[in-house]
Length: 248
Image (cartoon, rainbow, N blue to C red; front, side):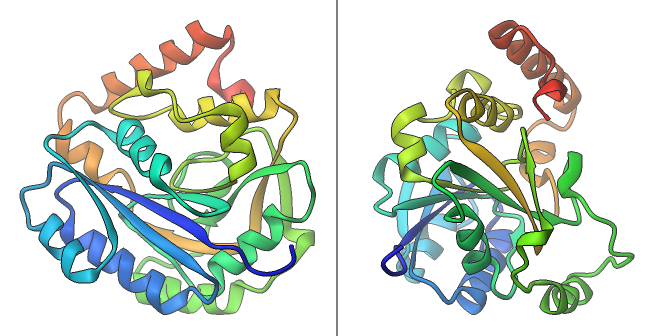
């Protein structure tokens, strides 16, 4: 890179104002490279839109809850950054998080998507810290987050909680598949498509962020959460002819 290029941070949200405010505060505190924030509000009724207007972030206000893939795609469509980052509203970012992930993303021409390690995720991105509270985990991240390519790991699947990719990848493979709405497995699908096009995916083992985990889905689908996951797993299998786990 000739210099730091802006990253568009896209945050879909639904009735999670307390989570969103915490997430935005952490971005502003711990991000030392250029960025823009785009919040896509899925028809919240808790004052999210008004809060975003006061915060002077770019806001897309949807009249109803369209789910994660559709909301994410609307944010991606207006993003101006050379990198795009999909971020769950229940994440808290940490010191040097974005600069280190950008270092990994631009470590080679063929690296297309990178993601951090965290306390709550499926697959290899979850690590055990022995800690529970946010304050403890932020202190852990301060010591942990030091750029180290030896801690990067190439994988075939990344979880979409904090999903950083190049605009060039987006221009080649397009937006998320909205057939996975309201959510789950759209990130597996995106990774699968990226790998098919020859892109590398990296876990940034040198970069830890906090993730609370599945708050919006449990709130919106308290009884049907497991059924939703299974339905979208079957959709992935029908689309690609393999189990999602085989993309890992």
